[in-house]
Image (cartoon, rainbow, N blue to C red; front, top):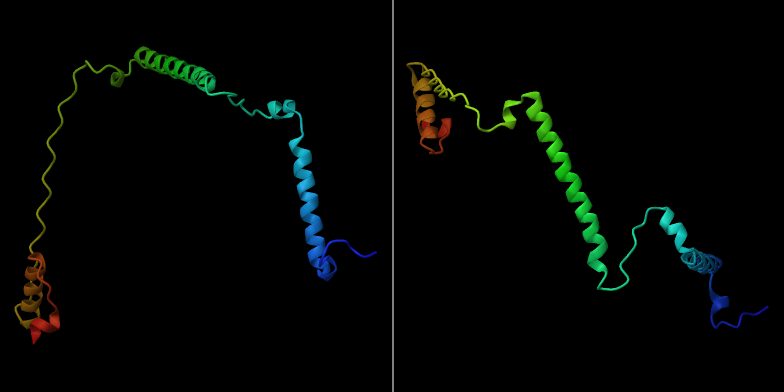
Length: 141
């Protein structure tokens, strides 16, 4: 039988199979879209507001529930801390004074050899402390 679609017979077999697969997938998508709304409700999908007037009502109710739950949780946590005698829960108690931090020990003075090598190393350390770039070979020259 000859196809009524122009150029369809010129398509290779792989393209014909691909076109058929696309049509089958589109049919499956249409079939799945026709599933009744009760199936969507059993999966835990939230309802969507049908108009702009009712948009904030359901969301505000959920926010109020979450806020109330958070306030109740915070109150029970604070009560538990007070009952347990946790000093961190009561800010009015005296706090111990902080001890002053110990000063870091000064680094030991470096000893350099009393020869050309020691003098070059000492000058490199001094120059690097001042932020001046230097190299051993450059100073030796």
